[in-house]
Length: 450
Image (cartoon, rainbow, N blue to C red):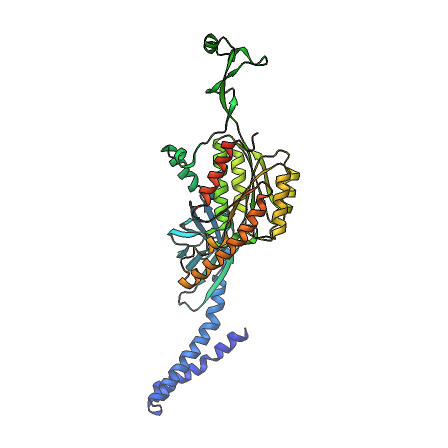
């Protein structure tokens, strides 16, 4: 009330100035008139502010604006698209002439179609709508939101802003592109030539012929080769090939150092791609596959199994994996031995940047427990020097550091071999191929038979 009274009091000087200028113009020169003009404008702005802002605050009802976000999916694979619809409801009794809406989305996602904001007019009890499409290049758990609401007055003097803390979670599974490529290669019958034999073949009761041997009393009569008997007058047994399934356990390092590399191509991201590929191949071949992620202890654990639901569980655990914390292979192996009764082929995927004693102790424990250990190790310098933004000097320094790391890695590899374990250092170019080759070679040798 005080400000309104002062504004009303300010009307009197305005009328006095207007009267003097119109009735006695000879008393004022040009400079005086300009000064009086700006004084008049200033007084009018003060009055407008005094009356206009309270009225605007009454009409700018941001609480009456409700935001509804509709997603076409809440779970998808990396590289797929999400359609986001934003519906704005005006629950207030007055129309809003100048309304801005901004909907936030994660920086790791790409806006590929539409816009994530709207400038519009919305009537009382009315609604408006806009939509946009996001591409999800990186797996993980993300939130879309919040939504910012801004109401302007007609002249653009005032605005009222409100943040609507409405979030929608989206779970992005690891990319399915590698599996698609694998299927294409399989359809073209090229996979066998690239990666060798796929089956673990042993003597048994299968359909493919293995060979002929002498008859023993415990053999079944139905396997006697009577043609061979007619030639040699000795009982012979026909043997056939049978395919055996193997048990594979993957121990994935998700410690802080695994996050090194380009944002979308870190050591952890390549490792997860390799695990997805292994899980798919194991599912196709009816092998049993389990997964454990660890830092200084096991964080998630999926026991060995098979089937579509089992594969989806592995994908979900991988989607949540984030590089954080220190690494302790020894403690992780201890936890794994306690949880896993059956032994088999153990893939350890780690950059081996923990303590040397801890690494050797972990490999020793796994080997002593009966696991056949294969270590796939993403080599740090290979992932860091791939950055195209690095200049010649930085790349030369990176290569020099890589040579030093090679010496350390070679000494570690020799010590690991004492525990009947192999170590393969990989980079972005040969990561997936090395993992596939090791898996198929293990099947060929019958490592980890169920």
